[in-house]
Image 1: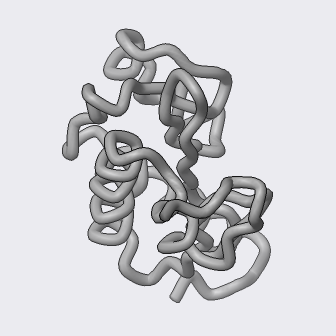
Image 2: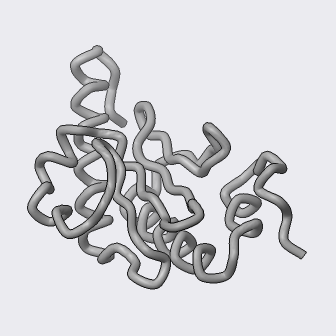
Length: 131
């Protein structure tokens, strides 16, 4: 039996377990792509959704009634990839997609790698080692 999303998830596994099959499959795939692109990132729950942290917030994902979301968390990265993202709905730092039409693996990896570079650059500007 699936847990209600009203129960606060303690892990990405908890979060995914509470989703309908189609959204769970789409977000589990997205999770694997993020983990492959950012193996050094931590995977906590923040605002009741799975996020990835590496020198600050990196990316995150969530399921909603009518779509799934990939939170890029950067206006500059979204602008840099605007042409590739133009066919997707979303918000300033978020890409929406249907569970049955997942984001292309290459695009997810590019966005995650761009966020890693952005966070490492910001860390160096603050005098912190990016490693």
